[in-house]
Length: 429
Image (cartoon, rainbow, N blue to C red; front, side, top):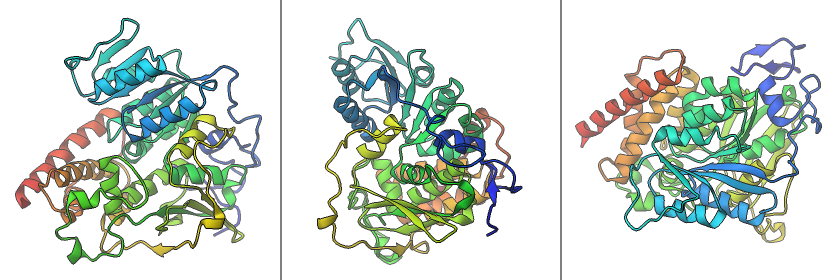
């Protein structure tokens, strides 16, 4: 690698005299000319509480975000909540945290027995969820929606000039080409533990001196198993993650290593890094959340206990650090750390996702849609574990790649890919 290569947001090399990509420098609070941390340019904690919207408030990330809010009531105030179907749970959250605005993305009516207080505004439909992102009173939006549905919300958040605390992988996987041009005009802080780790390792560093990103993986519940052993594993077995407690879809993605493939695509967009300089390594204890390797051979590793409240809180407090939301890591009782390469021959989804990212255009959208359909089918016991990768590969092989031009285009690609995946699953069932 040449000593001072810098990269555009699309990963293409720039001349040595060019500045750090504007989106990266603005998100990290660094000086574009020197690449060093400039606290004056980093977003400061407001004197009044940050007013936040939580999309996906009844899911795992949403509930843990509310745990952080409860720990820091003087610093955070929730002004909006959104959920998919669990209206009763969300209304209970709204009452507890005095939240005035609610949105339901998938259900269309209030369940029997649920009473909505007069001081709470409840709206229905996907657009209602997006509208929460543009509330005048909101400073920051936590996007913890599951799946492709989070893309429109991420775009709306950034266009409205809000801070986007992003936990929705699909926003960047599907629509990174649409989102990143808006990121430099606002703020984008990753919540995902791996990208949050890389984000923190890069603060104060020159982008031109980064040699490689290392994204860590636990290996999931089936680490070390062969394809023959995986032929008949059940959804219950796949949902038994050894180190993290997550929602069903992301837990299955972890077991197939699709989760890591999606994270590679995210890292490419977030950190302006070419795919051949983003590596995945298995770290079974899940204590090293990711690493950044620099051109002088130094490596920064971000470590911590396996609790999502740590990266969630950092995204909410950035550029400051608040008191720990959990018991910190005790190095005296840590024991050993293991590292090993990912088994991409057995767990094919990682390479399929990486291939989709390298192909670019609409291919990641088609890949993601196929995976969502296949994971749902596996959870419903309509396809086997290994057929998840088969389904994704089938859809990718039959997709005609286009340059990404609009949200509407991606929605149509998503629709067609889901139809293709559903037909394939039906044909092999």
